[in-house]
Image (cartoon, rainbow, N blue to C red; front, side):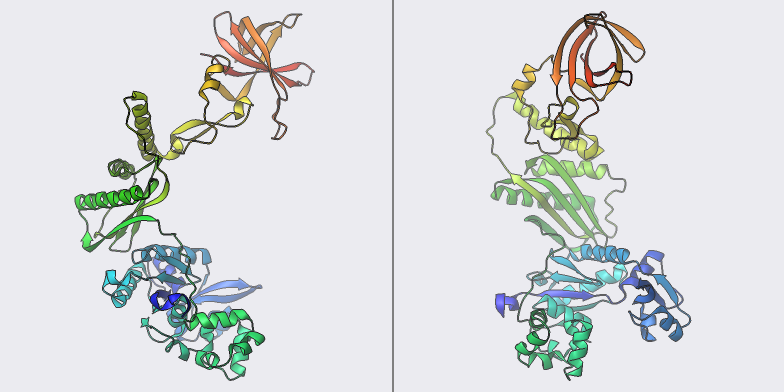
Length: 513
């Protein structure tokens, strides 16, 4: 087999009554009548899914609702909800992460797991499958057909078309007796194969592949090779496994908060050691708690700087747990706890100094992290410079926990502009009335119904529009720094855009302390 597929093991799940299981779970119980789920196809109501009772009387997906009612007058028709079904499958995929980090959706009603190297954690594939089916049953799945094989396509074919459940195979002997439908080719292709007298996978596999490539396509022969285990098609995990990860499985579910805290401390230390070995630091850490009754909780914390300090990370976790509306309830206990660094960045080693400013920067970063955890990242903001000379566009408020942008505040520029720009600038300049003498010397301004007599004025400083960006409502601006007779200082400008009467328009943009 190409790619050593014999060494890999894939588990595929098929839940034939997923829609009805989801509906019963959401509505707190079953219906007294057989359930069918209906969708419009070219204006005709067709069955998209059925429950076990409807299946027992011969109703199938794809049948029209009129034909279904002719066979079974007393049934309950419900509008199909594919988005809700997909969300339910995604929830089940999260539960399956307790068995392997490599899980993907197998649409429309299945899951595929790469369990290579995982079965020994559960005393073999049989025990792994039994525990997985128990978890699914607790989640509300009534029937789950399961197969384990060297390739995902072989496992999918066995799960959906074999009568053995659960099914564990090492080669293609069992898959060869499956019907042609196990290849899941187009309906017209399946009909052509049946008319040719080919009814099983073995009857197709024993004939030269060139015959089918010429009649159908290369995709058909590639699918046949994957179902027979001759080619491996690796699954793409729904959640990419984190490169820095540690987990702790419990022989018995753990409900003690003290024990859980100690386990989390050990996992955090292990992940930090992994980060140190690669000379990186973590920015986002995720703790995943798998409860014995199938509930999965994820707690995520983010730091403003790369870190690999277990104590600091655990302190953020405690703050995060204290801020949750619903605390981390262990219920009947957690049987698996995972801790991951889902984002890592280069770590720069720094030598300790006696400079108090360096220590102050570290303390500010720690304070930002704790405030962001307690109040939410979007509520702890800082100003970030923007590459623009338009005053209201030259800075933006961003979460303080985000890394610094490429455009840093330049200390020389700040010092050179000290006193030239007010620390408070309004996002929308305020309209004002300005009086000037016959020589255009500013005499007074009226702002918020209060008149201020001008004692000194410096200007103008002209700022033009940025032609490569959307234009503002002011055009070219002439800025003045003015001081009133009471000692108040304002930053005002005259806009190039005039008023309806042709008079210049004036605005107050900032206030000096």
